[in-house]
Amino acid sequence: MSGKNTKVNFNLASPIQFLALGFGSGLAPKAPGTFGTLAAVPLFLLMSTLPPLFYGLLVVVICLSGIYICGKAASDVGVHDHGAIVWDEFAGFFITMFMIPVSWQSVLVGFALFRLFDIAKPWPISVADKKLTGGFGIMFDDVLAGLFSLAIMHVIF
Image 1 (cartoon, rainbow, N blue to C red):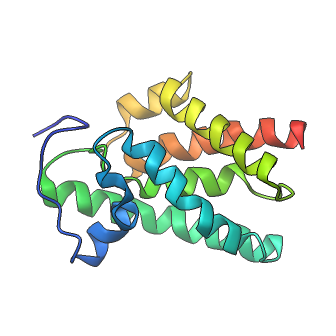
Image 2 (cartoon, one colour):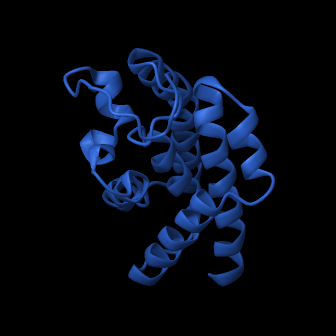
């Protein structure tokens, strides 16, 4: 089965699917990636109090564990990169906000930039989205979107 928004039955009782679905935020009937990114904001605000080294290490752990989490959830439901799988949006937003001074303006701009790059998928994000498979493929295009957004955020802020 393939398709980003194919109807499947996820199991929020499964810890892997619960994480992959962004604590349930990915089950929003419209714009699950946007709702997933929105659900990442409170976690970012908690993480933003960490020293940069610990924040960065935590983001690396989130990204590496995301390869397994997203890949396993996709495999469980038989749909590669189902739209409800939003752990990758969490990771991409956390990358976007790395070492950015926290204000409502920076969070809003970071949110908008990340969503723009994640939705528009300019080159090379589009290549990663089309060519890479499995958990790595699910994660990598959002990591790239986060890095593009991060670069712009550091110019702005």
